[in-house]
Image 1 (spheres, rainbow, N blue to C red):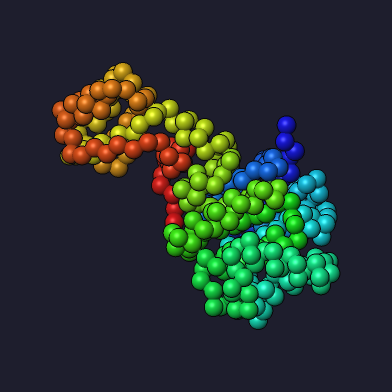
Image 2: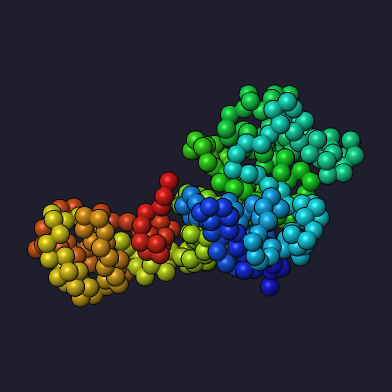
Amino acid sequence: MSETIVEISGLRKIYTGKHPVTAVDGIDLHVSAGLIYGLLGPNGAGKTTTISIATTRAIPSAGSVKIAGIDVIAQPALARRCIGVVPQYNTLDRSCTVAENIHFHCRYFGMTKAEAAARTAQLLDQFRLSDRASAYPQALSGGLAQRLQIARAIAHHPRVLFLDEPSAGLDPQSRIAMWEAVQGLRSEGITIVLTTHYMEEADELCDRLAIIDHGKILIEDTPSALKASTGGDKIYDLRMHGVRDSGILERSLQTIDGVTAVEVIEGGLRVLARAQDGLLAKVVTTANEFGLRDVTTTEPSLETVFIRLTGRDLRE
């Protein structure tokens, strides 16, 4: 059984004031070493607050966080030696070159000049930044700046890397390059915990993930298991002319062999079903009697899981 390297127990964070806000509401989480673990949810769900507490930037109202067995509240300085952090916003030192951003980070964590120089050169090569070593951060594209932030964050060989919304603001090509860089860290034995509200990112990168909203974990599993939990292999979205007799249509669809669930969506119904020859024809024939306008076919996704849990689309 893999070692639990991130252990979060009963975590709560309440921002006090005239109108108190509960940002994190009793989170329990255990991350095994070597995984890429995701916290998936909309903006304001509590993801960033959870990461802020785990990386010693915020104090919880209740609960505990241990990284590699170290209590981040009781021993924050010691915990920081075990973690790397790439926050949601660019925190590169604009007065230092690309190479200096990495080099001074190495020196901060106690490396000699020679060790820092060697580690800097290695990371510049690893993250394909060698040709920009003397450039300043403001001259970098968003994708290059993000790669530099990751390189700097792992310069001191942390056991856990926290990435908060790592692909926010990146173009598709830069996002893919960032994904490749993150996946490449597996070989270094780094456990990665990331937050995201991008479904594709969570599905592509994560070995396991937790869907979080309103400061609570709604469900936790592998991406494939979460998608399988919808109870269907196919999803048929039926757009109807009006909503007359929708209850009768819903019950009629539920009697079709292979249909596992029928849900009301805006403008029609969603049918979840097992893959089966002739099933779509039966669904369409039944819906036609009630004014079918259009039908789209998809497979279960993480977004499907999220919407079923929360009853609404993700917030932007």
